[in-house]
Length: 398
Image (tube, rainbow, N blue to C red; front, side, top):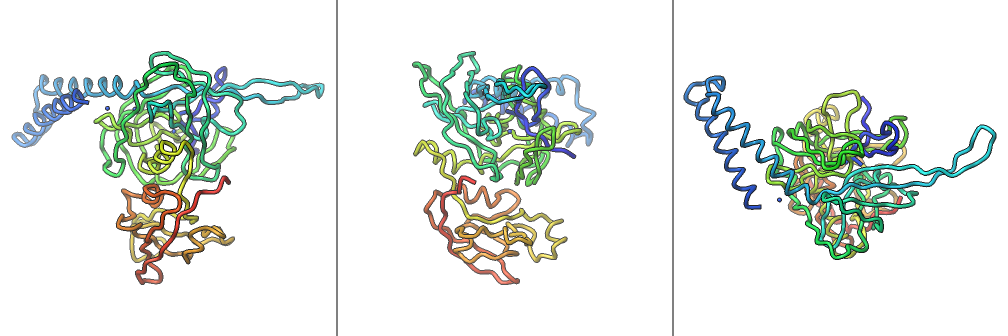
């Protein structure tokens, strides 16, 4: 099954990428109460009669109406922090006679405001290296053409993220989105996705649930090129379309808990989002320094599940398993991991006091620290638990 990114590279044609190029108040609390009230009515009926089907039509309508009001309010409040991102790229082509000419390509995606100073988070593949210009359009239609790319993670980095800055707000007051806690999300929790669907329909809103977590996928364009390894993703059935890349996935409190990144081609409503906790360290770095500085350990790992633990005959089923490799790439030479003495087949179970599990990946745990900070890694090696000290460094550009 092909996994595709969601930016909208060529506006006049069908999109080459499927991810979304992968936003919250007293009124929300009131509406959550309404949903709880409707749910309470349904629950009471289930308890009293043993069947949801015996609830009255009026009670069902009240529940549906309350949920609709909640989604509408989320769309209104979170939506004001969502922007459309448009990019231009100058490329050189050659005609039938061998004459070279310059042509312009357009692309579109989504982003969300994280600072009232004009800083925006989006996907790396929405604003790839080589673009000639970036513009953003706010929810109210205000367009800014003088937009700077502060930084983007490298192509080999599993965190597909980039940060933009509007250089002159022209007196405009922006509303930053509220960041949630992605570690609290459970399978079945309701979520809302907001994005620039198809690069044409700004602030399209879709709703669904968290269908799974800890997903590892390979994502690329429709040609099969630009394959990237993305790890520890949320899976959602909230409809995500080309142009949605970089947009927020928000919880029922209107807090962003993920950044929409990819979809499964040929499937119905299987989308993927990067948990926001994995990005909080990067966001903190950008907001405090104006630069993208990612803490880096230098290991290649998989997040353990019951199945992976059983397949590899491991004694624990949660943690970050440093996978064996034939070329020695699991421990990057010269990295903090190598300097600290980590080995292939080590299982990292804690970073300081934070457990590495199905709720908190190694990437997420490390993202809470800054470049230069020392961390204690609790590892399992050959059946023995030990502690290793590592000092995080800045991630290399490549």
